[in-house]
Image (cartoon, rainbow, N blue to C red; front, top):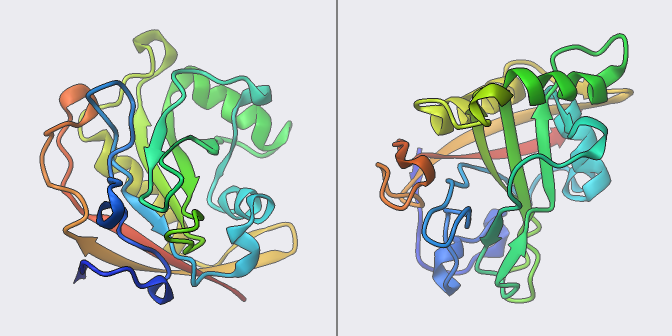
Length: 214
């Protein structure tokens, strides 16, 4: 476990958004946000730092794009302190519950109905802090009958699920294999529920993942 510092250092693979006015809560509403509780370090396999590679990597963790590309819910924004200011989510991925028949796309359709784990992602690539890292806001939600509300403790649960999927064994999609290591960082998020959407408490820890090709 490590703590954060107050200087811009791209060589570490990510930059604390707060240094240049960003934050580790996204903008869900005018006043509330959801925690960006996972960072995929810019020191990872360069392929997964691209949008195509990132999509394939998260498929190896059991996540894929929304059911038939249909977006459910609000579009969130985030300011990663890289000079790009607030940006719309670049990725919204949902847990897929089965791979055959139909593959991940049909699997995410079930998540849209039954609820489960999902995340939004933004890339830190502005001119003032171009680390290349992906910042993710992961959570677990209720089913569609409950309007996809986040479950109690859902931010911690969603983060921990994705991290467990990543680090348990080498993961793969098609012929590509990855090994992932995690470092737990405190000090980026304030523990508790101040400013957090739905008033759900979270523990303040951010998981920094470094992904290498094997």
